[in-house]
Length: 411
Image (tube, rainbow, N blue to C red; front, side, top):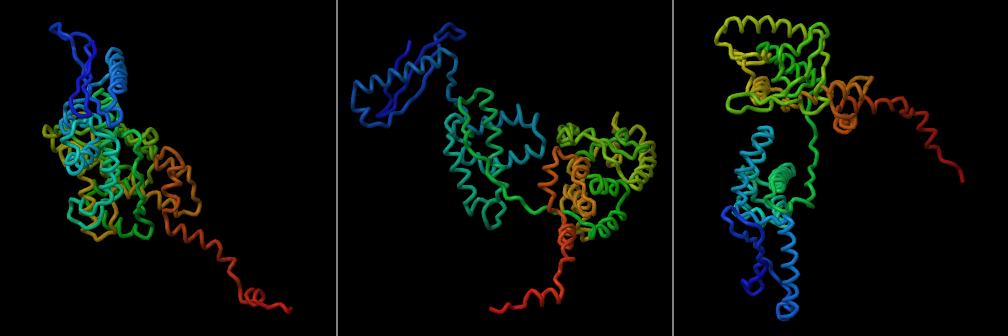
């Protein structure tokens, strides 16, 4: 059974009965349509034909099981479910933190009270555009517009939330489809070059052995923060001077480290380290075993033998190395770069060498392709750029050459 009812000047409610509920009653599916064609509204026969066609299409959708009723939950309600059922289980803590910050501070104040099925593509486009040009959008009180990277985070958060709503059949169409990902202007990469190393190594030599090994590993091994934090002694091969990247600690949940595979397939590999670094590891291993023996029953490492811990065997909290690195920079007045930029510094140092071998650097950096290495790091070292330019010094014109070239011809 199908029918329609007029609900307003240009609003009509389509009603289709199909199937039965648990009590044996017929299920009703409804859909509201609005007609903006004034000429159509004034012509009874044309209006009737139009409504019958829309009703027939609606009935086919319902009977084929393709109709998805507009969800009555508002977006803020769905975000809570998305967080509990997907975000904290599938995404890294850092990504969840960024998404939730974007949602709470910017997205939900605009869309939170709207029904998720009513949010349109054009509304999101306008939202992103307004955020990118508005001068009063920053929450930190600083002047200026929001950065391109921040707008990209809004886009990523919205895309993830609506993708789950579509997959879970909460909405029939994904309003993010057709919205281009905002571009982000690539920032100049920060790193240490060979001229900086003296101060950096001198500073690290004044720090406890554990932290010295941690940051030198990032600097000369190109290890990421989570990879170093997840290192265990079973991953160290002293006989070949290799360190095997097996796991990646991306956060904590209920007091336990969240351990995942490395960032990419190519990240899961071994890295050959300098002899002097492996000697430091041997010295530290002796110290580590003494600490474990002293702790006895208070040792909290369990079956894991994490290299880096706070004294009880548990892996470091995943943000601790970043906090410690900031303190080291401030303490010794070092050039300010991020912890992750120590990894970039390894590539920069290799780029400074005379016999640059991009495939070899790619393998050591564990990039998924040589294009990443060349695109991101091809211009990384100023010293290398100067060395390249100096190759043309031999062509510098002599006084004789200049005089000869400037001789005027008689006409």
